[in-house]
Image 1 (cartoon, helix red, strand yellow):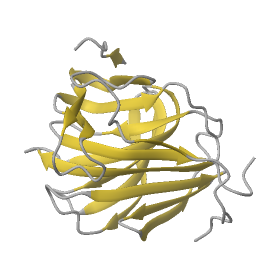
Image 2 (image 1 turned 135 degrees about the horizontal axis):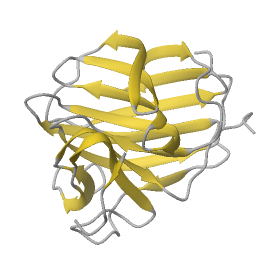
Image 3 (image 1 turned 180 degrees about the vertical axis):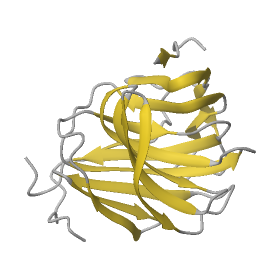
Amino acid sequence: MKIVLFAAGAMAVTTVAFADTDTFDKSPMGKPPARWTCGVTGQGSPVWKVEADASAPSKPQVLKQSGNGDYPWCVRNDVSLKDGFVEVKFKPVSGSEDQAGGLVWRWKDGDNYYVARANALEDNVTIYHTINGSRRQFKSADMKVAGNQWHTLRVEFDGNRFKVLFDGKVAIEATDDTLKDAGAVGVWTKADSVTAFDDFSHGKQGGNP
């Protein structure tokens, strides 16, 4: 794992008991926001920075990944969440190999976490677990993911049950027992994806410990 220095329907949950949202609007531009740690699974040189974006759902700033790497990630380093939800608005800007935006949860380190992503070049939504740096898909769904447009990706997780929603529609319901402990939450891209993120939220929901 390489760290990038900052200098550069089965879910039985109904009410939100706690939620926290990052709009990135109060963060200094040109570097990752406070309380976030960024890096890459595998090799590469991702570049995570807060930038101005006139198209942002909550203006004026976004978190943007504009470098290149196998699987770039950026996580909230002050969060440890076992059951709950994570949600983000994202815009796949460009990329010849991939145009992906994703969410990670139960992040233990840069080689061990869950990830769900939507890909504008493949028009699908997929859920994976990454163990010891190796990513393995366990369910996927074909859905239209328009490039250079804002979308909403959300994951709800409770024990071994997962629900992935894309633009408000359920894309995937799946079970997996690989990662059971609480971990950090954050965002993710792949390869040469240039992707903007805004309105990142996470929290526990009613009925979850």
